[in-house]
Amino acid sequence: MTIISPIRHDDKMTATQDPDPDSITRTEAAALLDVGVDTVTRLRREGLLTQSLGGRHLYSRTEIEAFATNPWISAAEVAEILGVSRARVSQLASAGKIPFHRTRSNKRVYRDQQIRVVKNARSQRLGKW
Image 1 (spheres, rainbow, N blue to C red):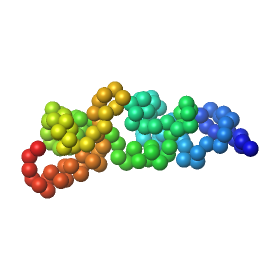
Image 2 (spheres, helix red, strand yellow; image 1 turned 135 degrees about the horizontal axis):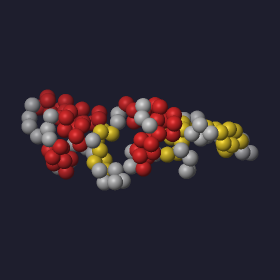
Image 3 (tube, rainbow, N blue to C red; image 1 turned 135 degrees about the vertical axis):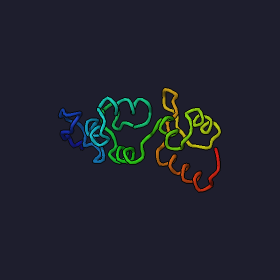
């Protein structure tokens, strides 16, 4: 037996099957991340967030909260954290010395916490890149 209940669909009510209790709307995801709804959509299109329940704009609260505590950052931000140039960041990524992820538009992005681990390891070694 299918249970029909109302769920939010970006501030609209629609009748559908009971959603995953972990699911939140795009608007709620934007509020958790302190960004606009368009930014959430862009992050999904780049493959940095995943959408749940088919074509609906629902996301996993767990994934959004994890994203908020360990965001993807750009090469410019990595360069600032490590104290090197953006070109050097690219060299380090190509050499496999720092982890990265390629977005669907082929840009490299980096996890903030992973870069901070690399920075701490480097400062303990006191070596150069």
